[in-house]
Length: 199
Image 1 (tube, rainbow, N blue to C red):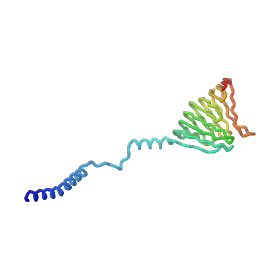
Image 2 (cartoon, one colour):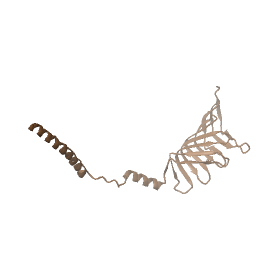
Image 3 (cartoon, helix red, strand yellow):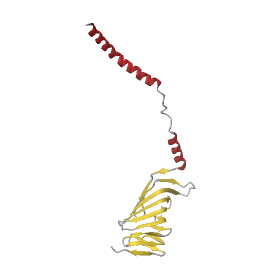
Image 4 (cartoon, helix red, strand yellow):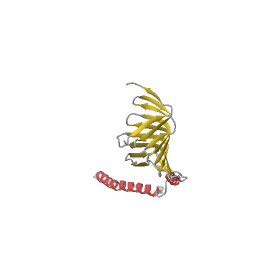
């Protein structure tokens, strides 16, 4: 009987001691843990924000609107910032543009860099410019100027690419709006070379 009584007392004491020991261990963990400053700014993020504010850099911009003829124009880019010389130009990187014309034709343009004029609605695309039309043309050039007011685009130099009928090469390409029909026409000038590939 004495053994049973001792065992019961031991179990009763352990039921009290184990929770107390756990409580003491937890208390010491919190008492001796190092304080962490949660109010401080991350230095990398702060530098990044200061640099962006100084350079007026905008990430992932999107511009959209309509031309005077009613065509829908959308521009997206990896980044954009105003020209520091105050020329009214916005400098963009990795430019993507899409023009949905009223006649149903769609034109997409991509380039490594670009300049967008806020005042004159003019865009200059530079570096690996690719133009794709919904009617089957894919053209490549190094620089192209687009006048959204006049609905006119012109390459600065030679172009090469593919067409529904084959391949083509020319010294210049012009996309121009027909004022009578309001349709877009594509002209090739300065040494046009066409290679017809029958289907």
